[in-house]
Length: 191
Image (cartoon, rainbow, N blue to C red):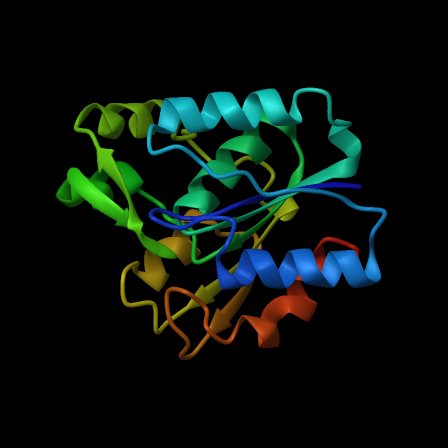
């Protein structure tokens, strides 16, 4: 199996969820081809990196996991390839939500790492947005009512028909991710 993990805005492969999944796979399923790239700030550049990286992957033996903005990208990947997708508090309309974040930003996991989120990136996000979710049965999502950044109702509506694990509390970063890792692994057919 080939598994792609896409991190969120201002995040990185050093995120707790990405590291936790990578460690579990290394210990229990070293046969899985795991790729968690550092995504560039430009959505067009991120999409080019993702498309190039998965270009030769077998479509019937791949899946994608995405967190927040990575969930938006994961949806685009699933719609483009037909693969399964597991979304963790996915961004539904990042063009709208990130318009307030144009300017200099720091990486969440390394405040010394700066990048500039440019105004034209909003248009790039709009260009990547799938018009609709086709075959919602190939999607699953972990959605936290306690998400302080994104509206859980909007996430549930966007992925209507998908397998949704709706959490009464938690937070945007899913700091209780260890509680939900078995669900993610089960959906992916890994455990």
